[in-house]
Picture 1 (cartoon, protein in one colour):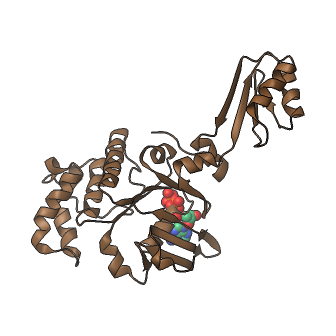
Picture 2 (spheres, rainbow, N blue to C red):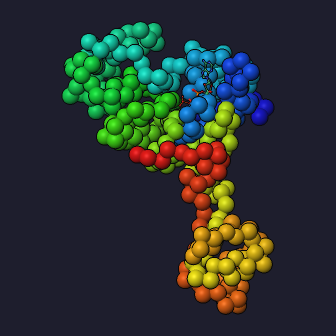
Picture 3 (spheres, rainbow, N blue to C red):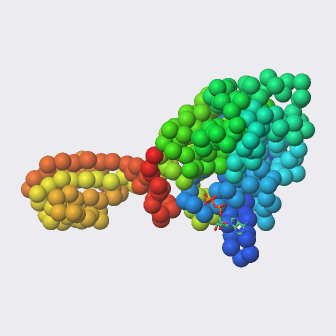
Amino acid sequence: MSDLSSAPLAIETRGLTKRFGSHAAVDGVDLSVPRGSVFGFLGPNGSGKTTTIRMLLGLASANAGEISVLGQRMPQRLHDVLPRVGALVEGPAFYPFLSGAANLHRLDTADRTAPGATRRARVGAALDRVGLTHAAHKKVHAYSLGMKQRLGIANALLQPRELLVLDEPTNGLDPQGTREVRSLVRSLADDGATVFVSSHLLAEIEQICSHAGVMSAGSLVAQGTLDELRQVGQTQVRVETPDAQLALGVLASLGLIPGTDGSTVTAVLEREILPESIVAALVVGGIRVRGFTVQGMSLEERFVELTGEGFDIAQ
Ligand SMILES: Nc1ncnc2c1ncn2[C@@H]1O[C@H](COP(=O)(O)OP(=O)(O)OP(=O)(O)O)[C@@H](O)[C@H]1O
């Protein structure tokens, strides 16, 4: 990558690194987030997602590496870039005894790039966008967590944004709040913004994202479209048979490394071996085949393989 600042990507990093003492919380990360994508930034707790996001937004400095956001170098072009970016990181601080609308007015007033003349209309539109018009004049302490989170997103939407960066927007929400925030994220992308959303929930990423990047212990271990991420995984063959021990022998004789739980024999399919030749060998070997399937890895299996950790797939 010769000139990072001319990249047609919404976010691009090269060798991005952040150390806390001797510990690299983010370690040589090369992110490529296409414009118009909903990019899921996935990883277990502590894998470096928030630290990366803070560097992207100029909230933390990097020890090494380069960052480009909307084609501009960060943090050098911070003041040009930030007005084009809406962010929800660690939840904005709302005054509990002010209404949702009053809080947004206050936050918009504090933003020197926000035109005062259109403030009232923009606050109304942002509340409408996140479905909070009915609660605009309710005090924030009476909001549910999901409503507070949506108010945080409304804050990010007070001005038209090309990029939205949302750090774990459904964290701590009940299933209803989670559904509300998810469908909001999906609809934000429909408006044409690039959405960069972090999560430790695989199901969430599968439901709302077009692309994903996977963090593990500070490193970006994979990124691409969801389909690309599925395809790089291994393909497995699965034979259901009462002759499991014999089938193990047949598969092994073909050069595969099979395993069995008693009635099912599985093996990772090597590229040079065709499924039909496995079926033929089983038949020739007199194996009674009750079922034969060839399946790619699910995203879940792929991510567990990549990170070496189980993911929360709930919700
Ligand atoms: N200010 C800090 N000082 C020291 N260590 C830190 C600091 N901030 C983060 N870390 C460490 O850096 C690592 C990555 O943390 P980070 O918050 O970026 O992970 P994460 O993937 O966002 O996880 P989570 O979802 O739990 O926030 C962790 O080991 C964390 O303890």
